[in-house]
Image 1 (cartoon, rainbow, N blue to C red):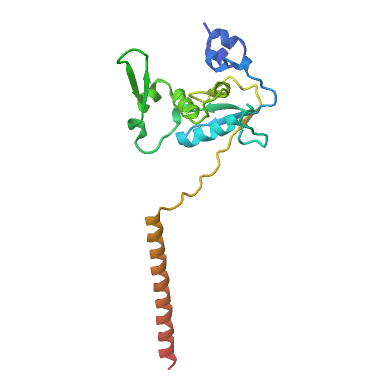
Image 2 (cartoon, one colour):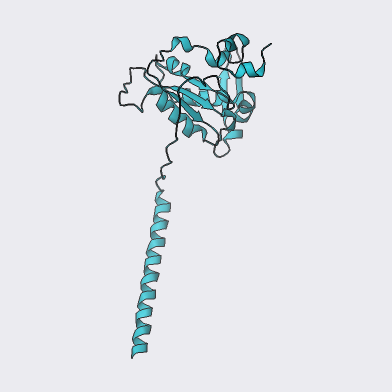
Length: 207
């Protein structure tokens, strides 16, 4: 039996114990020379926005040496997958579909049920569907390591926290833009009227 303390240590025996077997699987097939270990904290982050940033790092688009046919993306460690957030009613309305291959065996699962079963697959599916479907996709998938909580077996690596970029102001819709312009025009006319009334009142007092 493996103790909890032993499972937390980033030691090769953890693979034999089975504690981090899935997390450490396939690392030998990755050329780690010159790669950075980027850490993403999914707590409180919106699913789609976080997945898009992870996809950028996996493809190496944040590097000046990016080329679409070269695999030079960094390792991505995602923590607190169980605390990811979604907008709107996606938690109950979003449904994952897959087919077993047998007639009539179309399966479905809601996002809420998938979060209870395995929250790491929610982020993995979102990231993989943002990556190009080519020969480099499997290699990029191996560089993505997702954990439900804060614990991970890569404490001996030179980890680098990823800072999410600030959100850009969404461009206003035409109807909202027209309403804003009308409000500004009305405010400007009211201010001009108040200034004119103040001038008239001052002129009457001096007269």
